[in-house]
Amino acid sequence: MVAAHNFGAEPVSMTASASSPDDPDRSFAGAFLLDLLGDANVPLRDDGGFELELDRYGHRWFRIQHPGDRVVI
Image 1 (cartoon, one colour):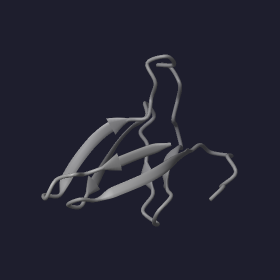
Image 2 (cartoon, rainbow, N blue to C red):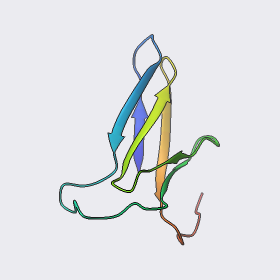
Image 3 (cartoon, helix red, strand yellow):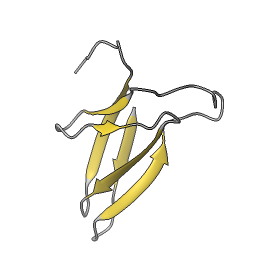
C-alpha cells in the first residue's frame, strides 16, 4: 500500500518510488498504483518510480497492481 498526504495549504507535485532497498532488482513493468479512493490510477516506471499531484490538504491511497493480479477493492 502507498499512502500520500499533503498537510500544507498549497498543492504539491511529488516523485517517489515503490521499490524496496531489500529488493532493488524487482521490475514494476506494466504495474500501476490502483487508486483506492478515486479513479485516478498512477502508472509506475519499470524501476517503481512515479509522480503524482496532491491538492492542498489532499490525500491519496493506492495499492500496487501488477499485471495479472486480481483487482480487490
